[in-house]
Length: 175
Image (cartoon, rainbow, N blue to C red; front, side):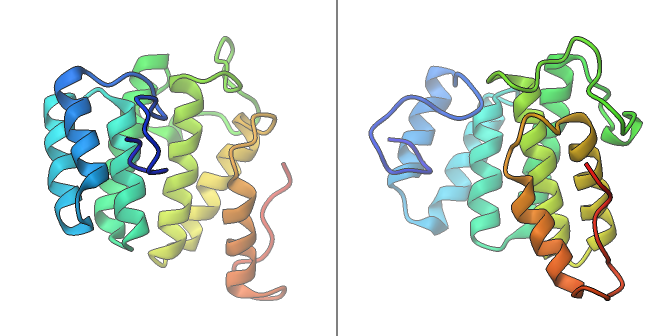
């Protein structure tokens, strides 16, 4: 069962999950929300490089407004995806203008997952009262992943609306 959709499936966003951890994901999908985190973090301990588990953790905690835990999972997911695709571990090290050469953000895989984790961190930053950090992440997304839309425009609209048209946050940079 897919933890996010409730449908019977062994397809998880972020790729394959080792068998032992997959069973824990299925258990988490059937569990009460209070028990789900324990099952997901256990699965992550069994398969620390599994992007799918990190995504499920991030979504679970963000959905419960447990932003500190969601950020922890998103940062781990971002770092692991960066490692898998050959991006710098620290997202701040990337140039803002264009995608790094040889990185395909359009196809499913760790590069696209990396974009989704940037978007998740922007959302978490915004909801945690860190609009400047959210803006920085969204600016990076607009530069390196502009053509590979990942839904960041929703977070950008929330950020723009957080301060109003003349507030201290102001519009996002073009991209």
